Image (cartoon, rainbow, N blue to C red; front, side):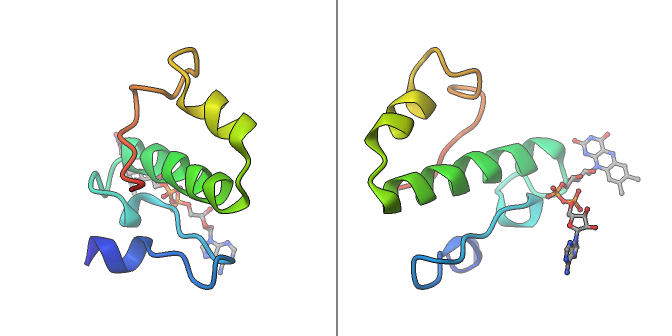
Length: 70
Ligand SMILES: Cc1cc2nc3c(=O)[nH]c(=O)nc-3n(C[C@H](O)[C@H](O)[C@H](O)COP(=O)(O)OP(=O)(O)OC[C@H]3O[C@@H](n4cnc5c(N)ncnc54)[C@H](O)[C@@H]3O)c2cc1C
């Protein structure tokens, strides 16, 4: 189910929100899903500069959220 609700559609529609997180029903799930969605969009766009920033240890969200982008 998790895989289905997080699957982007046509490279145009990305789904975020606590319901699409493994930590559903919590704010941390919202943040995790936002991080994952933004990363998915950046990967789709090939925006290496922003991917590097988002995955850098200096990024405040790095290590605080668990990305499931594969
Ligand atoms: C009473 C209560 C207490 C809670 N306490 C805690 C707590 O102590 N700790 C904790 O971690 N979590 C708590 N939660 C859960 C937490 O609030 C949610 O997990 C979190 O807010 C979900 O965030 P979200 O951004 O995924 O979704 P939401 O915060 O639900 O945001 C979704 C947004 O989309 C909007 N929307 C919906 N449909 C449309 C549409 N068709 N077009 C445009 N906009 C639309 C909605 O108006 C809403 O603003 C609590 C929840 C409730 C109800």
